[in-house]
Image (cartoon, rainbow, N blue to C red; front, side, top):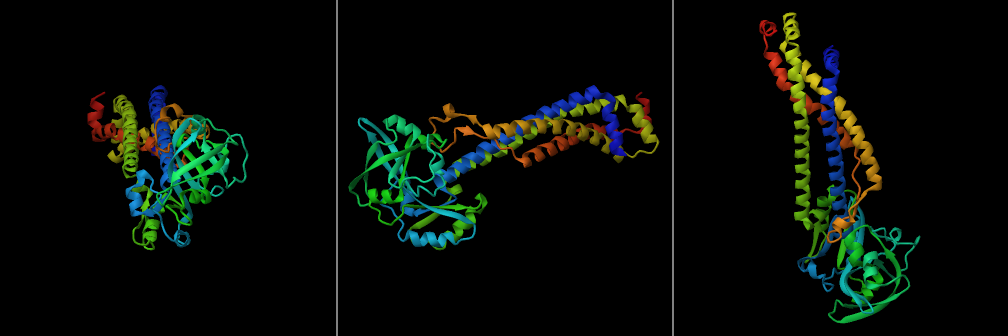
Length: 404
Protein backbone atom coordinates (compact mmCIF):
# COMPACT_ATOMS: atom_id res chain seq x y z
CA UNK A 1 0.00 0.00 0.00
CA UNK A 2 2.83 2.40 0.87
CA UNK A 3 4.45 1.75 -2.51
CA UNK A 4 1.22 2.56 -4.38
CA UNK A 5 0.77 5.65 -2.22
CA UNK A 6 4.37 6.79 -2.92
CA UNK A 7 4.02 6.13 -6.66
CA UNK A 8 0.80 8.15 -6.79
CA UNK A 9 2.53 11.06 -5.04
CA UNK A 10 5.46 10.93 -7.51
CA UNK A 11 2.99 11.17 -10.42
CA UNK A 12 1.08 14.10 -8.91
CA UNK A 13 3.60 16.55 -10.32
CA UNK A 14 4.87 14.77 -13.40
CA UNK A 15 7.02 17.57 -14.80
CA UNK A 16 8.96 18.02 -11.57
CA UNK A 17 9.37 14.27 -11.13
CA UNK A 18 10.57 13.86 -14.72
CA UNK A 19 13.16 16.66 -14.36
CA UNK A 20 14.40 15.10 -11.13
CA UNK A 21 14.59 11.66 -12.76
CA UNK A 22 16.55 13.15 -15.69
CA UNK A 23 19.25 14.37 -13.29
CA UNK A 24 19.59 10.81 -11.95
CA UNK A 25 19.50 9.47 -15.54
CA UNK A 26 22.45 11.69 -16.55
CA UNK A 27 24.41 10.74 -13.43
CA UNK A 28 23.71 7.01 -13.95
CA UNK A 29 24.74 7.29 -17.61
CA UNK A 30 28.03 9.03 -16.74
CA UNK A 31 28.79 6.55 -13.95
CA UNK A 32 28.07 3.48 -16.08
CA UNK A 33 30.23 4.77 -18.94
CA UNK A 34 33.04 5.77 -16.56
CA UNK A 35 32.97 2.45 -14.72
CA UNK A 36 32.86 0.43 -17.95
CA UNK A 37 35.67 2.48 -19.43
CA UNK A 38 37.85 2.22 -16.30
CA UNK A 39 37.28 -1.53 -15.91
CA UNK A 40 38.01 -2.13 -19.58
CA UNK A 41 41.19 -0.04 -19.61
CA UNK A 42 42.57 -1.26 -16.28
CA UNK A 43 41.68 -4.87 -17.06
CA UNK A 44 43.43 -4.51 -20.42
CA UNK A 45 46.56 -3.04 -18.80
CA UNK A 46 46.83 -5.87 -16.27
CA UNK A 47 46.10 -8.56 -18.87
CA UNK A 48 48.70 -7.13 -21.25
CA UNK A 49 51.37 -7.06 -18.54
CA UNK A 50 50.56 -10.69 -17.72
CA UNK A 51 50.61 -11.86 -21.36
CA UNK A 52 53.51 -9.82 -22.70
CA UNK A 53 55.80 -9.20 -19.75
CA UNK A 54 55.21 -10.91 -16.41
CA UNK A 55 52.85 -13.91 -16.67
CA UNK A 56 50.95 -14.69 -13.47
CA UNK A 57 54.10 -16.10 -11.90
CA UNK A 58 57.54 -15.78 -13.47
CA UNK A 59 60.47 -18.01 -12.53
CA UNK A 60 64.06 -16.85 -12.96
CA UNK A 61 67.33 -16.73 -11.07
CA UNK A 62 67.73 -14.13 -8.36
CA UNK A 63 70.68 -12.64 -10.24
CA UNK A 64 68.63 -12.44 -13.45
CA UNK A 65 65.97 -10.46 -11.60
CA UNK A 66 68.59 -8.12 -10.15
CA UNK A 67 70.14 -7.45 -13.58
CA UNK A 68 66.95 -7.77 -15.61
CA UNK A 69 67.21 -4.38 -17.31
CA UNK A 70 70.34 -5.72 -19.06
CA UNK A 71 68.54 -8.97 -20.09
CA UNK A 72 71.44 -11.22 -19.01
CA UNK A 73 71.47 -14.39 -21.14
CA UNK A 74 74.20 -15.89 -18.95
CA UNK A 75 71.76 -16.28 -16.01
CA UNK A 76 70.01 -19.55 -16.70
CA UNK A 77 67.77 -22.04 -14.93
CA UNK A 78 69.33 -25.52 -14.95
CA UNK A 79 67.11 -28.60 -15.35
CA UNK A 80 64.34 -26.32 -16.62
CA UNK A 81 62.46 -29.12 -18.40
CA UNK A 82 62.19 -31.11 -15.16
CA UNK A 83 61.04 -28.01 -13.28
CA UNK A 84 58.40 -27.24 -15.92
CA UNK A 85 56.94 -30.75 -15.59
CA UNK A 86 56.59 -30.24 -11.82
CA UNK A 87 54.97 -26.82 -12.23
CA UNK A 88 52.42 -28.16 -14.73
CA UNK A 89 51.13 -30.56 -12.06
CA UNK A 90 50.22 -27.70 -9.68
CA UNK A 91 46.48 -27.14 -9.37
CA UNK A 92 45.34 -23.89 -11.01
CA UNK A 93 48.20 -23.72 -13.54
CA UNK A 94 46.80 -23.45 -17.07
CA UNK A 95 50.09 -23.36 -19.00
CA UNK A 96 53.85 -23.03 -18.57
CA UNK A 97 55.98 -21.41 -21.27
CA UNK A 98 59.70 -20.85 -21.74
CA UNK A 99 60.87 -17.56 -23.17
CA UNK A 100 64.37 -16.48 -23.99
CA UNK A 101 64.70 -12.71 -24.26
CA UNK A 102 67.78 -10.96 -25.57
CA UNK A 103 68.76 -7.48 -26.69
CA UNK A 104 70.21 -6.99 -30.15
CA UNK A 105 71.00 -4.35 -32.74
CA UNK A 106 68.84 -5.43 -35.66
CA UNK A 107 69.88 -3.99 -39.00
CA UNK A 108 69.29 -4.07 -42.72
CA UNK A 109 72.01 -2.35 -44.68
CA UNK A 110 72.63 1.05 -43.12
CA UNK A 111 69.40 1.02 -41.10
CA UNK A 112 69.91 -0.31 -37.58
CA UNK A 113 67.54 -0.35 -34.61
CA UNK A 114 67.83 -1.61 -31.05
CA UNK A 115 65.39 -4.50 -30.74
CA UNK A 116 64.22 -7.11 -28.27
CA UNK A 117 64.39 -10.67 -29.49
CA UNK A 118 62.17 -13.38 -28.01
CA UNK A 119 62.70 -17.08 -28.39
CA UNK A 120 59.31 -18.78 -27.95
CA UNK A 121 57.32 -21.79 -29.06
CA UNK A 122 56.10 -20.16 -32.26
CA UNK A 123 53.04 -22.37 -32.67
CA UNK A 124 51.91 -22.59 -29.05
CA UNK A 125 52.19 -19.28 -27.26
CA UNK A 126 50.13 -16.71 -25.37
CA UNK A 127 50.72 -14.07 -28.04
CA UNK A 128 48.58 -15.97 -30.60
CA UNK A 129 51.26 -15.00 -33.07
CA UNK A 130 49.81 -16.93 -36.01
CA UNK A 131 46.68 -14.75 -35.84
CA UNK A 132 48.65 -11.49 -35.75
CA UNK A 133 50.60 -11.96 -39.00
CA UNK A 134 49.71 -9.24 -41.53
CA UNK A 135 48.41 -10.05 -45.01
CA UNK A 136 48.65 -13.80 -44.41
CA UNK A 137 46.43 -16.57 -43.09
CA UNK A 138 48.89 -18.75 -41.24
CA UNK A 139 47.99 -22.01 -39.51
CA UNK A 140 51.53 -23.09 -38.69
CA UNK A 141 54.53 -20.80 -38.41
CA UNK A 142 57.94 -21.73 -39.76
CA UNK A 143 60.37 -22.70 -36.99
CA UNK A 144 63.26 -21.39 -39.10
CA UNK A 145 61.83 -17.93 -39.74
CA UNK A 146 61.93 -14.59 -37.96
CA UNK A 147 58.75 -12.62 -37.27
CA UNK A 148 59.10 -8.85 -36.90
CA UNK A 149 56.82 -6.16 -35.49
CA UNK A 150 55.21 -3.90 -38.09
CA UNK A 151 56.79 -0.63 -36.94
CA UNK A 152 60.21 -2.23 -36.46
CA UNK A 153 60.11 -3.76 -39.93
CA UNK A 154 59.17 -0.39 -41.41
CA UNK A 155 62.02 1.43 -39.65
CA UNK A 156 64.74 -0.98 -40.78
CA UNK A 157 63.17 -1.40 -44.22
CA UNK A 158 62.58 -5.16 -44.41
CA UNK A 159 59.79 -7.19 -45.97
CA UNK A 160 58.72 -10.80 -46.01
CA UNK A 161 61.34 -12.95 -47.75
CA UNK A 162 64.36 -10.81 -46.83
CA UNK A 163 67.20 -12.42 -44.90
CA UNK A 164 68.60 -10.92 -41.72
CA UNK A 165 71.84 -11.66 -39.90
CA UNK A 166 71.35 -11.84 -36.13
CA UNK A 167 74.52 -11.28 -34.13
CA UNK A 168 74.38 -11.38 -30.33
CA UNK A 169 76.47 -11.91 -27.23
CA UNK A 170 76.18 -15.52 -26.11
CA UNK A 171 75.71 -16.99 -22.64
CA UNK A 172 79.45 -17.80 -22.69
CA UNK A 173 80.46 -14.21 -23.26
CA UNK A 174 81.43 -14.51 -26.93
CA UNK A 175 79.65 -13.46 -30.12
CA UNK A 176 77.59 -15.61 -32.43
CA UNK A 177 75.45 -15.00 -35.48
CA UNK A 178 72.78 -16.78 -37.49
CA UNK A 179 70.97 -15.80 -40.66
CA UNK A 180 67.17 -16.14 -40.83
CA UNK A 181 64.52 -15.33 -43.40
CA UNK A 182 61.72 -12.88 -42.53
CA UNK A 183 58.75 -15.23 -42.54
CA UNK A 184 56.15 -12.72 -41.42
CA UNK A 185 55.40 -9.23 -40.10
CA UNK A 186 52.98 -8.98 -37.20
CA UNK A 187 50.88 -6.38 -35.45
CA UNK A 188 50.04 -7.15 -31.81
CA UNK A 189 47.99 -4.01 -31.31
CA UNK A 190 50.48 -3.05 -28.59
CA UNK A 191 52.78 -0.21 -29.59
CA UNK A 192 55.91 -1.35 -27.72
CA UNK A 193 55.65 -4.85 -29.23
CA UNK A 194 55.20 -3.58 -32.77
CA UNK A 195 58.07 -1.08 -32.38
CA UNK A 196 60.76 -3.18 -30.72
CA UNK A 197 60.09 -6.92 -30.75
CA UNK A 198 60.81 -9.83 -33.06
CA UNK A 199 60.23 -13.54 -32.49
CA UNK A 200 62.28 -16.60 -33.34
CA UNK A 201 61.90 -20.22 -32.28
CA UNK A 202 63.32 -21.50 -29.00
CA UNK A 203 65.61 -23.74 -31.04
CA UNK A 204 67.13 -20.83 -32.93
CA UNK A 205 67.34 -18.65 -29.80
CA UNK A 206 69.31 -21.39 -28.03
CA UNK A 207 71.50 -21.85 -31.10
CA UNK A 208 72.20 -18.10 -31.31
CA UNK A 209 72.90 -17.65 -27.59
CA UNK A 210 74.54 -21.09 -27.06
CA UNK A 211 72.10 -22.05 -24.32
CA UNK A 212 71.67 -25.74 -25.24
CA UNK A 213 68.61 -26.92 -23.26
CA UNK A 214 68.69 -24.22 -20.59
CA UNK A 215 66.07 -21.50 -20.00
CA UNK A 216 66.43 -17.92 -18.80
CA UNK A 217 62.78 -17.45 -17.79
CA UNK A 218 59.76 -19.66 -17.18
CA UNK A 219 56.33 -18.03 -17.52
CA UNK A 220 53.53 -19.61 -15.52
CA UNK A 221 49.91 -18.77 -16.37
CA UNK A 222 47.07 -19.42 -13.92
CA UNK A 223 43.40 -20.13 -14.52
CA UNK A 224 42.68 -16.73 -12.91
CA UNK A 225 44.65 -13.71 -11.66
CA UNK A 226 43.49 -14.31 -8.09
CA UNK A 227 45.35 -17.65 -7.95
CA UNK A 228 48.79 -16.09 -8.48
CA UNK A 229 49.83 -15.89 -4.81
CA UNK A 230 48.80 -19.47 -4.06
CA UNK A 231 50.60 -20.84 -7.15
CA UNK A 232 53.73 -18.83 -6.36
CA UNK A 233 53.81 -20.33 -2.86
CA UNK A 234 53.66 -23.86 -4.27
CA UNK A 235 56.28 -23.15 -6.93
CA UNK A 236 58.66 -21.62 -4.38
CA UNK A 237 58.60 -24.93 -2.49
CA UNK A 238 60.14 -26.84 -5.43
CA UNK A 239 62.73 -24.29 -6.57
CA UNK A 240 66.46 -24.84 -6.14
CA UNK A 241 68.75 -22.35 -4.43
CA UNK A 242 69.21 -19.07 -6.31
CA UNK A 243 65.96 -19.44 -8.30
CA UNK A 244 62.95 -17.30 -7.41
CA UNK A 245 59.29 -16.93 -8.37
CA UNK A 246 57.46 -13.59 -8.53
CA UNK A 247 53.79 -12.85 -9.09
CA UNK A 248 52.69 -10.21 -11.59
CA UNK A 249 51.71 -7.94 -8.67
CA UNK A 250 55.25 -8.07 -7.30
CA UNK A 251 56.76 -7.41 -10.71
CA UNK A 252 54.65 -4.34 -11.48
CA UNK A 253 54.09 -3.33 -7.86
CA UNK A 254 54.11 0.46 -8.22
CA UNK A 255 52.01 0.43 -11.37
CA UNK A 256 49.60 -2.15 -9.94
CA UNK A 257 49.14 -0.10 -6.76
CA UNK A 258 48.56 2.94 -8.94
CA UNK A 259 45.80 1.12 -10.89
CA UNK A 260 44.13 -0.03 -7.66
CA UNK A 261 44.24 3.55 -6.35
CA UNK A 262 42.70 4.85 -9.58
CA UNK A 263 39.84 2.35 -9.25
CA UNK A 264 39.13 3.51 -5.68
CA UNK A 265 39.22 7.18 -6.71
CA UNK A 266 36.86 6.52 -9.62
CA UNK A 267 34.34 4.78 -7.34
CA UNK A 268 34.55 7.69 -4.89
CA UNK A 269 34.03 10.27 -7.66
CA UNK A 270 31.10 8.27 -9.07
CA UNK A 271 29.40 8.26 -5.66
CA UNK A 272 29.90 12.03 -5.39
CA UNK A 273 28.41 12.57 -8.88
CA UNK A 274 25.32 10.59 -7.97
CA UNK A 275 25.02 12.25 -4.58
CA UNK A 276 25.22 15.71 -6.18
CA UNK A 277 22.50 14.69 -8.61
CA UNK A 278 20.50 13.56 -5.59
CA UNK A 279 20.44 17.11 -4.21
CA UNK A 280 17.72 17.71 -6.77
CA UNK A 281 15.82 14.88 -5.10
CA UNK A 282 16.21 16.68 -1.75
CA UNK A 283 14.85 19.86 -3.29
CA UNK A 284 11.94 18.00 -4.91
CA UNK A 285 11.00 16.26 -1.66
CA UNK A 286 11.19 19.50 0.34
CA UNK A 287 8.89 21.21 -2.15
CA UNK A 288 6.52 18.24 -2.00
CA UNK A 289 6.46 18.36 1.81
CA UNK A 290 5.64 22.09 1.94
CA UNK A 291 2.97 21.66 -0.72
CA UNK A 292 1.40 18.75 1.21
CA UNK A 293 1.55 20.06 4.78
CA UNK A 294 -2.24 19.85 5.20
CA UNK A 295 -2.19 16.32 3.82
CA UNK A 296 0.65 15.35 6.18
CA UNK A 297 -1.23 16.79 9.14
CA UNK A 298 -4.42 15.00 8.11
CA UNK A 299 -2.62 11.67 7.60
CA UNK A 300 -0.97 11.92 10.99
CA UNK A 301 -4.27 12.83 12.60
CA UNK A 302 -5.84 9.76 10.95
CA UNK A 303 -3.19 7.48 12.44
CA UNK A 304 -0.29 7.30 9.95
CA UNK A 305 2.82 6.70 12.04
CA UNK A 306 6.02 8.74 11.86
CA UNK A 307 7.83 5.67 10.57
CA UNK A 308 5.31 5.16 7.75
CA UNK A 309 5.50 8.83 6.76
CA UNK A 310 9.31 8.72 6.81
CA UNK A 311 9.35 5.56 4.73
CA UNK A 312 6.85 7.05 2.25
CA UNK A 313 9.02 10.05 1.34
CA UNK A 314 12.15 7.85 1.26
CA UNK A 315 10.31 5.52 -1.12
CA UNK A 316 9.35 8.42 -3.35
CA UNK A 317 13.04 9.34 -3.69
CA UNK A 318 13.88 5.71 -4.51
CA UNK A 319 11.14 5.52 -7.17
CA UNK A 320 12.43 8.67 -8.89
CA UNK A 321 16.00 7.32 -8.69
CA UNK A 322 14.92 3.96 -10.15
CA UNK A 323 13.07 5.63 -13.03
CA UNK A 324 16.07 7.72 -14.01
CA UNK A 325 18.64 5.05 -13.16
CA UNK A 326 17.21 2.27 -15.29
CA UNK A 327 16.98 4.46 -18.40
CA UNK A 328 20.49 5.87 -17.83
CA UNK A 329 21.94 2.39 -17.35
CA UNK A 330 20.19 1.02 -20.47
CA UNK A 331 21.42 3.90 -22.66
CA UNK A 332 24.96 3.60 -21.29
CA UNK A 333 24.82 -0.19 -21.65
CA UNK A 334 23.95 0.06 -25.35
CA UNK A 335 26.84 2.44 -25.93
CA UNK A 336 29.28 0.26 -23.94
CA UNK A 337 28.30 -2.88 -25.87
CA UNK A 338 29.01 -1.05 -29.14
CA UNK A 339 32.34 0.36 -27.91
CA UNK A 340 33.40 -2.98 -26.42
CA UNK A 341 33.27 -4.43 -29.94
CA UNK A 342 34.65 -1.51 -31.94
CA UNK A 343 37.03 0.01 -29.35
CA UNK A 344 38.60 3.46 -29.56
CA UNK A 345 41.99 4.00 -31.17
CA UNK A 346 44.52 5.81 -28.93
CA UNK A 347 47.58 5.05 -31.06
CA UNK A 348 48.69 8.70 -31.21
CA UNK A 349 48.44 9.05 -27.42
CA UNK A 350 50.44 5.89 -26.56
CA UNK A 351 52.97 5.82 -29.40
CA UNK A 352 55.84 6.94 -27.13
CA UNK A 353 54.87 4.79 -24.12
CA UNK A 354 57.05 1.73 -23.50
CA UNK A 355 54.43 -0.11 -21.46
CA UNK A 356 52.56 -3.03 -23.06
CA UNK A 357 49.38 -1.02 -23.55
CA UNK A 358 46.98 -1.70 -26.40
CA UNK A 359 46.33 1.35 -28.54
CA UNK A 360 42.74 0.26 -29.18
CA UNK A 361 40.94 0.28 -25.82
CA UNK A 362 37.74 -1.74 -25.42
CA UNK A 363 35.48 -0.69 -22.52
CA UNK A 364 33.99 -3.45 -20.40
CA UNK A 365 30.26 -4.08 -20.81
CA UNK A 366 29.93 -5.96 -17.52
CA UNK A 367 26.47 -6.98 -16.31
CA UNK A 368 27.66 -6.45 -12.73
CA UNK A 369 28.52 -2.80 -13.55
CA UNK A 370 24.95 -2.24 -14.77
CA UNK A 371 23.45 -3.86 -11.66
CA UNK A 372 25.65 -1.92 -9.22
CA UNK A 373 24.99 1.41 -10.95
CA UNK A 374 21.24 0.77 -10.98
CA UNK A 375 21.24 -0.09 -7.28
CA UNK A 376 23.26 3.07 -6.53
CA UNK A 377 20.71 5.05 -8.54
CA UNK A 378 17.98 3.79 -6.21
CA UNK A 379 19.77 3.82 -2.87
CA UNK A 380 21.57 7.19 -3.00
CA UNK A 381 18.45 9.20 -4.02
CA UNK A 382 16.49 7.26 -1.36
CA UNK A 383 19.07 8.21 1.27
CA UNK A 384 19.02 11.80 0.01
CA UNK A 385 15.23 11.83 0.38
CA UNK A 386 15.63 10.88 4.05
CA UNK A 387 16.74 14.45 4.84
CA UNK A 388 13.36 16.08 3.99
CA UNK A 389 11.59 12.89 5.17
CA UNK A 390 12.96 13.45 8.66
CA UNK A 391 11.51 16.95 8.62
CA UNK A 392 8.07 15.55 7.70
CA UNK A 393 8.41 12.86 10.36
CA UNK A 394 8.96 15.42 13.12
CA UNK A 395 5.92 17.51 12.23
CA UNK A 396 3.06 17.26 14.72
CA UNK A 397 -0.46 17.11 13.19
CA UNK A 398 -1.49 20.39 14.80
CA UNK A 399 1.75 22.05 13.71
CA UNK A 400 1.34 20.87 10.12
CA UNK A 401 -2.24 22.17 9.99
CA UNK A 402 -1.22 25.54 11.48
CA UNK A 403 1.31 26.10 8.65
CA UNK A 404 -1.39 26.09 5.99
